Image (cartoon, rainbow, N blue to C red; front, side):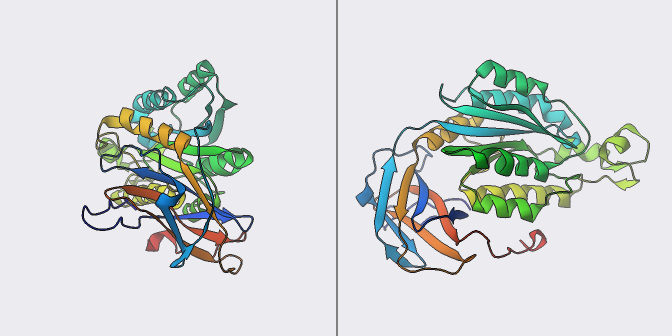
Length: 330
């Protein structure tokens, strides 16, 4: 969901993304980012500038904090057939993002095609990170859902502090078996990591291989059978884009497209790094208990006009969320 700015003459609008924070104690903590209409981060806000609501009822703020903190980012690089024409661009974009990081920020590099490979574990060594990005090479198949699970569950969930996934992909999955659209979005919903997909639309480049024959080079890469190749139809791409939107929505991140981002990816990466480092954190103890697995709605407001708020807008009581609607019905 795209944040809606406050009207010039009216009160600031409540803005939320369909995000969920998993609550382990009675204290609910919400990372909050505030921007002006040009997308510039707004520093210097105080506790009294914020109001927070649960299920429509205003809550008393029990914790407020903001400080410059290091963070950990998992870079997920799609090197599958559908991104064949974009791999060099993905490499350069990943390196450009790393250049925005501070000396205390850490990176994990994960590449995925038909398999998922951790090219480098958590490190702040820039030379090691760049070398890991360069090792990400073209391969058959696309196990995107497995890669997201690797980044969120197997890597970042074990790390304390601020953390995020920056996902360079077209969103198309063709070979994941252990994980699915819904299972990974559900886990992202419970996680404390932001997801920032960098969306590379490869549909036009792959039109020429939309119909393949078994045994040809593209047939082998895309799966072989005659007819539309798996992962190349307009429907496949629409589903892939929706998946990336959902990952961003449920974690409080944003989707960026290189060709349509104001200021280009350089500006986007600067914003992501600043946001991760300087988010506001607001905490409250709910005035009523919910049932385990229940989603409670949250709204965050700020008492200043013309600002945009991005924050999680719900949380899960306990550990097990209620099932979400199937991806095909979104």
